[in-house]
Length: 324
Image (tube, rainbow, N blue to C red):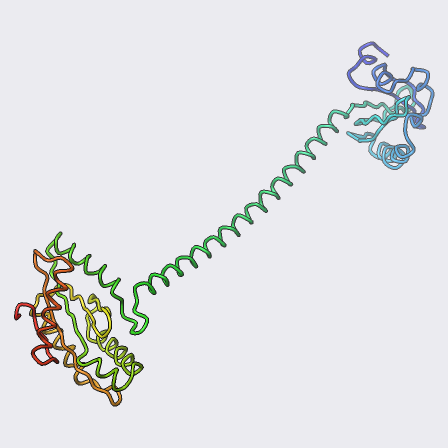
């Protein structure tokens, strides 16, 4: 064997068809920690474990007999200290001087195995990380859905609270708090852009007598019916509210006092002609249109003065502030 093959960077051995080693290079001897006479003349299986002997018989011999070569067959040899030594084996069956030899090259794959293990471990860690990330994303989506649901519930509750805070519980109309806010907004709009509006204050005539005669439940029923009547006789943008007791207030956007008086008269007539069982009522109304000098308080005062005038004139009538 020449020096190049003897010191080649891979193991080499040549054996007869019966498996007896004829030649082995120094590289393989060094790898397996054998002396030359411990392998040459010995069966190649002497450097194999029982498991690898079975593998060799089952795959290597039949394959090389059938095809004449073996490429990259993975198995392990055994060192002199009985350690497993993983290799990739390439073999070829060829005849020299009438004798059939099987020449084999062995490449150490320990680093490759370690690399494959690292790849598998990395893959496993990536899969674990992906699974953890996927679970975290699913949890995050669940938390987001729960947050959205709670946010919607909170919005709904806030709307209900706002509705309760701005609604008169008996009549279902807006309450004094809501009315005051709307009045301030309309005053501001008028001051900014001159948008006109009028205010109505109406009062049920002799309401105390109704309560004293028929009782407060009947009085409450009449207040509820009147609230519904107001809603039926108002335009979409009009704002009606219960101001307190038997008093109601209405904001009529875009109207002057004459238009407000007409609207109030329509409501007065509807209340007078309404039949609510055995009960009948009349209402008195005062109207006032906003002017440059007005505040919310002064406009309320003017409408109230007009209402007082309606009552002192005999009730069941509408009075505009300009008439007072």
